[in-house]
Length: 246
Length: 246
Image (cartoon, rainbow over all chains, first blue to last red; front, side):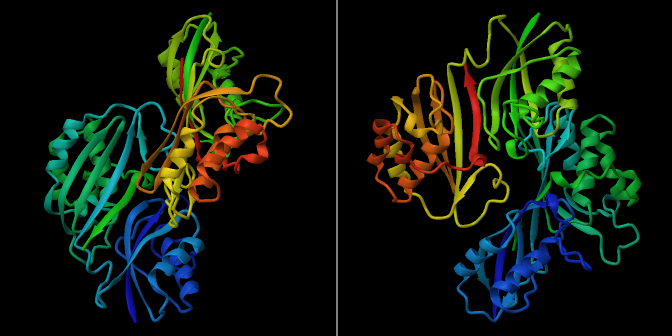
């Protein structure tokens, strides 16, 4: 039995998110498992590091699967490339320790939320960034972002509702706002993110950048733990899971 | 009467090329003219510098149009952004000399043909580059490319068939092959390009890179003027009109 670690890239536009659920065939996990099962001749289960939502993209989703097959890993990679639809790709495959689990062993995840800040559309980035027409105050957003770095209870910054059985304390190790022309990238690194957390934090920072709230106000949800004190949920297509570190 | 110069960006994937023709509503020119006519309240005709084919993209297509409207150009730009479908954008508008004509006055055009040279798909570039699985010999392709730079009769490198009423002599001022990771960009600059010329030259250079023909063999169609001596026509989606110089 071999345990393989894989890096997965996908354009989430036409897919119903990572995780298989009920009868939906249109999730990345299901499509990938079907392809691997066909290639390896046995039923394959893939563990994914991050359960990205409907419409969210990934450049560095990481997964693992176990197989009895002796097919060389280079062959698996080529066959996956020939089998998967062209909006999903496995870009790397390496043999991992038998105990390696892509989700349970993840130490840090990196997400980027991309904003195209211009009244004029960028047609080539339209599916991978969210357009904000009015100019954003980047320095104010940076001041606000710095208040969110560290270990906090982020329940107020999630769409969990009453569904929090486990701890909602997470550590954001860095939250950098990078500007490249009209593109503003909100770069998150942390030990894990609650449901919708990256998209709600970005929405809150954008409200700061628009002058709708003060930079200091982003601390309120950390105290109140109340979703209503945070900003809007940004649409999924600006979000990308960039990398998972172990 | 004002004469405006505009820069146009489009994702050609779902469109039938630049030029309006017959009853086809799905060309960039037609869609742009309809939007401008609606905004300016009069029938507008747009001259485009390059007649890009079905499926070809543009970052720097250039056009001009005349209007009696006194609407400020900044307003026209914003209204275009609100009116055009999201795969077409006008990114710049400037007032031009009354005699300026986007096609007739173009001095140089720059096209890039993008190749993704890897057995593994790049899902984010799949609509904007053509994938070649086997590794290409870049040095051989560069040697071949250098033989095409200069002023030649490129009839053998076009799909004109018998339709050449005018001169088929063109000048390629540079043809650089740039490598960035797995991406190979074929960067063309010239005073003009015949029908399908960039895609056929790229196809011929790729055959050199695959070892199917010698670098020197790319000179044969320049002498024979015979399309059959050149290589394959590459698919449109790797091609992008980057810039037009005046």
